[in-house]
Image (cartoon, rainbow, N blue to C red; front, side, top):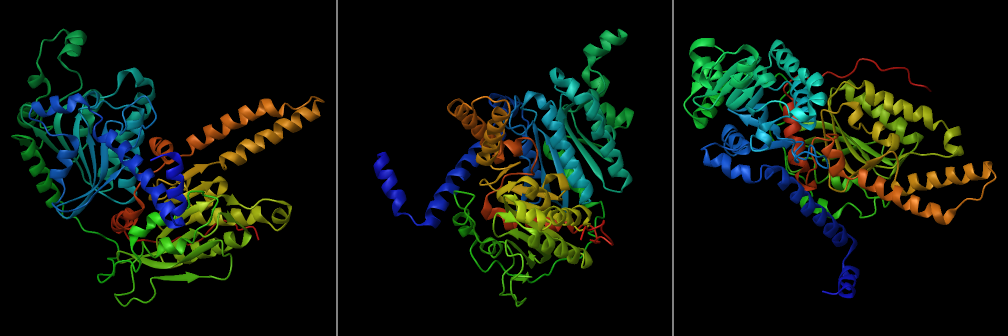
Amino acid sequence: MTTTETEAVAEEQTPEQLRRTAMEEKLASLHAEQAKAVEAGGKYIARHKERGKLTARERIELLVDEGSAFLELMPLAGWGSDFAVGASLVTGIGVVEGVECMIIANDPTVKGGALNPWSLKKSFRAAEIAEKNFLPSINLTESGGADLPTQKEIFIPGGRGFRDLTRSSARKQPTISVVFGNSTAGGAYVPGMSDYVIMVKEQAKVFLAGPPLVKMATGEESDDETLGGAEMHSRISGSSDFLAVDEYDAIRLARRTVARLNWRKAGTPPTVDYAEPDLDPEDLLDLIPTDLKEPFDPREAILRIVDGTSAGNGQPFDEFKPLYGSALCVGWAQIHGHPVGILANARGVLMSEEAQKAAQFIQLANQKDTPLLFLHNTTGYMVGAEYEQGGIIKHGAMMINAVSNSKVPHLTVIMGASYGAGNYGMNGRAYDPRFLFTWPSAKSSVMGPAQLAGVLEIVARESAEKKGQPFDAEGFAGIKEMVEQQIEEQSLPYVLSGMVYDDGVIDPRDTRTVLGICLSVIDNQPIEGAMNFGVFRM
């Protein structure tokens, strides 16, 4: 098809069709990037299987309950860096014997499962999610330890992983380590500090120093099995609680260990009879404009995510203050039977009315112990003399104060733009949401690329004028274009996900399922809202 024919076809498409086409292209790109994490081991995957071993994802698939969902987290960690996409770890939430668990699996096909700086960030975030949502943790261990060329970035912060394991145990959050292969040096402390340890016969090797290092340090001649084999640790040192005959047996033992945890959720169970959304989630692909400056009605997204009306629970979404601060849509709903309060940007900019409305709504959610869901599509708070005089700073601060001091769990989905302080007011990463996901259409930065480049041009022009020098507009055009392109690239979801600034880039159609899993996990503990907030500047 020629360019002219392609343009003609595009002109024939409706706005919804154009949006769907653009989103489908983004999703195809997303799947290709996620495939890089699955295939990160390259030729070593085949070599690994030739040794009769399972891959990290195969181990997880056997571990979780048949037919249950596994919510993989941070699959693009390390994207854009010098390391493999996925950072040699597979992490996520899976149901094991009916118990939701945080699962962290080393990928031994990527540099022997060695941990790099992005592996640390990913594992720390996984531990944080487990802590805040009171999840047992299962480590599927097979790692050569730290990636030595980057040890200066790993050694000092790496100790936090061992601290997290021991604190988890102290909180009565069980930790289980299943050792499938090497777990050497600092990695030996993962099973060493876990509550339950399973080792695979003739595969597991757990020692602080291998035979070569022992020889160099002490002159002692030894071998792997004598130093740290599974049988030795099961029969002599006592560091292993269960000796598995093979990997399948190890997974069986892990499942039985979880079955015996006597685990119970302490939160409020969801409504049993809930309905699927009134509108088809498939249509979420039609909603996001290709130009994020073009507004869209977030209610259309909300009604495709929340529980529907057929269960007799009234309206699916009860909007609060619908006639005031209309650029922010807020209200109450249910997702998979769990009550939620929703804040969604109806137009890009936030003004004083929206900020005050949000602050009140957040207080109400805390009063009734209800989790909050933030749906982003904002260019930030309004600027200009009229709005500054009207108190936009103090009203924006009021909203950020409410977000910061709210105690109910927060969930965040960045659907479109998330620029400037709007990212903060809408509970961006810096405000510790329990979970944060992005759509492939998301963009986050201090401001839009064109605006940022334009500001730089204005500053450069004023600087030249103050010095009495002519401003080279033609010469600066190249700089402006370069800056705009750089900011555009840095604001894309893959870049931010690679830096572990979100918990994953998701297909919009999966949003309801993903949020349902997250809300179920949150239900492990009772929800208690804030009793008070900081000073609101009036």
